[in-house]
Length: 402
Ligand code: ACO
Image (cartoon, rainbow, N blue to C red; front, side):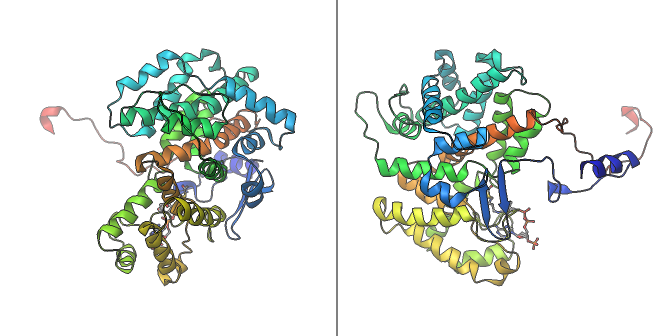
């Protein structure tokens, strides 16, 4: 493939592939997807097994280092991460500069970008001990940054991390706890969030991961590349879809819960009306993550928000779409985002924050890809070509003559 690509480039031919639908941009040993069969594996392990038996930290280790950790390796990894959860006090002041109603995604991206100013030892992407340190810093600090972005948005004081807690428990406490009050983490809530993080942890060359790789291919550091990835995830066609699904469900509810009418609007391709949480570039079958998430939605909502009207609308929407020719012909199935918003909402997170939760889950995948990219001898700076369709050469005219 690489040799053929080089040959074509040398002859002046270029591949026109908008959206990179059929372009392999790298080789990767991290995640395997079979979109027709609905299969997803991290480093060879089926997602169903990881969801059932693993933890988010263990999966992070697996993605980044290639194998499941031994107990000693996991303890060491956990301890290192716990040691780095604090933010520099000056970085905390960044949050004061943002408007109170700022969306937490650009706040998170800016804060991650700012990490390269606090940790200038991170600037050389080939300095392996520092890449290792940046990896740990990111895994440790991004949950703190995310919790502070939330606290800022509701005007509450920041809580220092409590490093006796696990990563997810610590994040929940910093997000929902108050300084003077004890906060008991509900183990079921922590387990559900941990599971959602596992399911989001990697998905090969999606828009944000490709962004991380592309930015990193210029030898920009890990923090800079991840900050760009967070912004790619922000878009409603990518990570932003989890918030968009909830807005869509709320909209259907406000109009009396008429699912068939909404599906008709989608099929008529009304401008800006898509069935959010449906469809995927690679999956032409039920997204295996969505299957697991649907079960979790039933369990969590059964406990925390029984008789949730939005869950009922979502299920009716899925049923209607899956038996409709428009969706059948185009092989459109629920994706990872279809049911996640309902769970996040039941756990107490506001809609605007859902995509931040996606970013927390996807972080180890981004890191794993950046590290794979930087160590791959085949990596070249990403620089696609184009088909020029503008004006032919023309003469400059003086402004008075235009
Ligand atoms: N609702 C209605 N129609 C859809 C949908 C949808 N959700 N998704 C695709 N289609 C239709 C398109 O209109 C197109 O129809 P056409 O052939 O008549 O023109 C056909 O299906 C193919 O769709 P494309 O947009 O070409 O597919 P693409 O691979 O470019 O897009 C995407 C994939 C962006 C995920 C799309 O399905 C979509 O917009 N889904 C809704 C947003 C969403 O849920 N995003 C999350 C994706 S998963 C993730 O990032 C975590």
